[in-house]
Amino acid sequence: MANVDELLETFGNMTLLELSDFVKKFEEKFEVTAAAPVAVAAVGAAAPAEAVEEQDEFDVVLEGAGDKKIQVIKVVREIVSGLGLKEAKDLVESAPKSILGKVAKDAAEAAKAKLEEAGAKVSVK
Image (cartoon, rainbow, N blue to C red; front, side, top):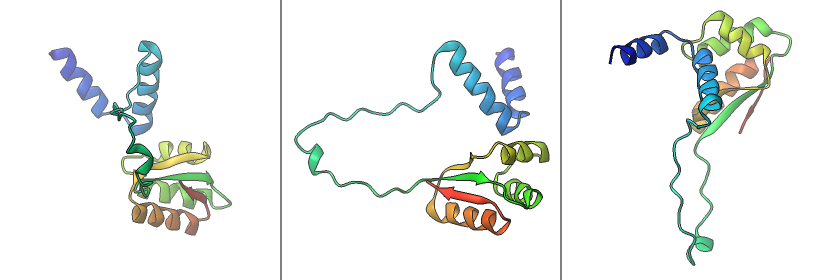
């Protein structure tokens, strides 16, 4: 179990971008996916009668930093917890890039407003 504890300690000290990169490489090496399993519903006669669900989770995507890149980096650090200056800068420079994923509509709209106020081009999907 010492190896598992050491791994957990190592992961705990990594940034979100480093963890994301690790997960991608892990998925490629072992040909697996870290996505949560989705239960497959049986398609029956009732399937067409189901109403389309309203979207309740949104992604905030940074399309571009605009002219005020430094201001946008500051806002990204404020919105995305745990990002250092370098990680936020890399995130802004790699636009278009998802900043927040699967957040409530009000949180997505608030983040969009802050980023646009700083001069960034943002979309909510």
